[in-house]
Amino acid sequence: MNIIDTDNKKKLAIVVVGYNRIDSIKRILTSLDNAVYTCDVPLVISIDASGCQELYDYVNAFEWKHGAKYVTIKEKRMGLRDHILSCGDLTKYFRGVIILEDDIFVSPYFYNFALACVDKYDSDDRVSGISLYRPAMDGNLPIDYVQDGKDTFAYQNVESWGECWTERMWNQFREWYKDTPEHDFSNVDMPEHIKKWKKAWSKFYMAFQIETGRYFVYPSVSHTTCFSEAGEHGFASTIGQTVLFSGEKKYELKPFETLTNYDIYGTNHDVYEWMKMTEEELCVDFNGTNGNNKYCRYILSPYKYPYKVVKEFALALRPIELNIKYDLPGKGLYLYDTENGNNKTADKEYTTNLAYYHIRQLNICSLYKYVYSYTRENLLRKMNSILRRKK
Figure 1: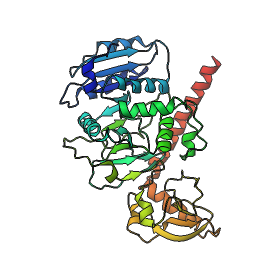
Figure 2: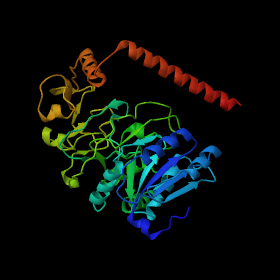
Figure 3: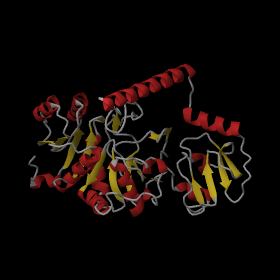
Figure 4: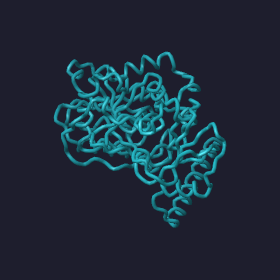
């Protein structure tokens, strides 16, 4: 793959990452081909070694009419983590790279958004990446964000369903990563379930952001969506599907310091101002993943804690922090005092409020069918895995 071209340093490249799913590769390349571009766009197709000759032949023959095309097929299996890292290293040849795994589908205007964000935020050292995807889920729970009229917001999460890095952003991560390939996550202030991820490159990028105080910039409306197909790190699901931006607009991106800012736990930093408390005084646990590692005196959460409730808010408005902003009276969101172990929150009340808030609308028949199908699929997958190992 000969991509050493001085003109490429002025261009934002698209990098499609694949392994052995030819139908997925066809879908992402078709959506890219149908997108809107206002300049010359290099395309890199990077395929990990799988031995799928049909896939190799397809990507080599694929015609890209929007600029130069480069294909690399790995001779030895890399695995997703090392494959993504190698694709990030391509930033040395381009102004930046947009990384798209093969189960992604793009908005027709995704490239315009990415280009506008690079123009605006590459010079800001606080920005370590640009997301094209707006998450609809935080772990296994729905998440909403403040709609403040801006096209972007800051989030200490790391996106793997459509991300963009410039050379500056990627080099800062690589400099941190070179000394920490087997990073000790025990002292990193991040959700415990993320620390347990075995293969994900994104865990390292999150730790890098937390330890250096940097953020991804996210779109207010998603410019990619994800089919979450069965692959190296998971099984098929529709959980990655989100509302996809389909219109055309001129992006008016605001300075980083004016953006709504969410930390790794999905907490809007404005909550501390609304509560008139500091981050050292208040632990915000909206999604059940913040274990109060800083030993704050107060905990704000819809979840049950063994402490006295000193203030209550309604669990009604979305996003959840608006109940705090407007000091909405009601039940479902509790401020606990950890210095008082008297918890008077009723179990039934707590469970009902939280369940209705997250489920939104409960259809017992549909829920039964989903649980049955989900359980059956997972059992079959595990049985097939056991049988393959025995062979």
